[in-house]
Image (cartoon, rainbow over all chains, first blue to last red):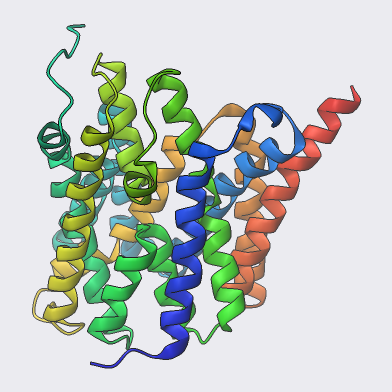
Length: 108
Length: 236
């Protein structure tokens, strides 16, 4: 099973950047960064913006079918919302959403 | 609430990782299956987990790779997505207190994912004393679960679930479910305009152009709204 050089490069580039994001702020003195400052706002907005974008793009293909075929999606979304509300856990909510999607998919 | 006064050892960290281990394994399995199903080799799927170790970004990487996105565009999109991690270290250390050690941060910070951060913060909130050994155990347990789930999913292969359409459908929804749950976990009132604009721009560009353009455009538009809100607030 080979590994393409461009995929290895992608892994190393993104892996290195992600490691820097996780590790460097532990060492850096962030007191210079004003909590409500422009950089803080940019960093704070990038995460929600990217995740909202990815959620929308990942459900768009399902939303283009008929209403019945969208029932698993709505059930899954509802289960994630309720699951997160109840558990405050990303992993639990994800698993509940996935299970609900599968259950309704099996029913129809 | 009872304060958690047990010693914060490496073993205690591993034990605390158990809920994450149980959750990560099936998601990583789904990732391994999806990656090989989209034409990546088992080794490529494993390398994504080994080096990047960020679930949502890895699922997106599959879409970008199979969609033929140029390396630089793909890397920048994934890096932008992971920027949120810069906030975790300082938030954790603030909660841990000024005297908390960070000598081995280079090791345990590699595994400071959304869920590990959440679990560590939760443990500290319940009164557990911060220790680097505990953080190492917590991070390592979660990482090993992610790697083994990926390996098994990649080994099972893209066609592994062809005879089980319900499981295949459920695993297929795991990615949108993960995005939505992550969104809920970081949602604040101030971020609502960012999220709405990012969603609208992403939808429009995806329908008019392509998924890759939609993702990039949505991210940039949302981040700009965050900055514009700041400039607006600064003016008033």
